[in-house]
Length: 289
Image 1 (tube, rainbow, N blue to C red):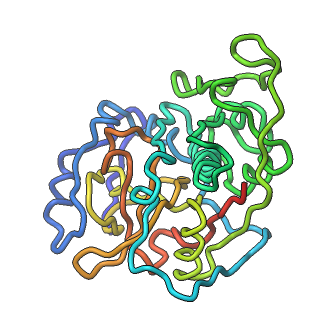
Image 2 (tube, helix red, strand yellow):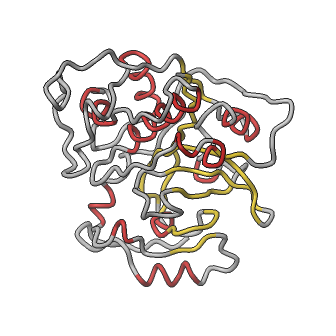
């Protein structure tokens, strides 16, 4: 493994690193310097992630089983109208984006909402005081908060922290001054990361939130099936698994990120499946809505 030391004020992305990645034999993904992070310094990139790698915690562990699983499955194909790519901006809010995003998906997938309703990540950032606002959070704390307290819609409390990386006070009113209506809650959440097939079976019920370890090379991802090849540990990140498949004999997870549609594969990426790459299959939650 190679590590390149840089000052926090230096520009994060390097053409030298990009060329190094392009020359790795049999790379299963295409690297680039993403326009989403053009001009970002090392310090700017540090704010994108959680402050620590997400750890396994004492929460309900459930192994999902299915009599027969399809060889590929994706909510991008089954119900694309129920999915939406968000952009966390300059706030380290991936933990809220992924938890609330999966909740929004699954209310639409289950028919609880007749069309996709975007629920409020801002409310979670501002009101979940166990987590750390724009300085990151732990996915199991947030789903626990959503089960206890619920969440209003984004129409009521819209996302603002992405503009300046500030947490903001927990709101007592909707943006328009009206009373915040009754919150929508998770009925239950379960850690379905009990093996590859358990995650696959859970995905046929809804999208699944997970956390994983970010290394330098992931910040150069453009397309393809990501496998870690280069760089130092950067932190933890939370995303949403929306499906799975196989390409050229390589199994992968379909994953939604929260860096906007201009990043990666229209806001999504693929990562190798069945190898717990970067702790991707260590802790993940299916939210029942």
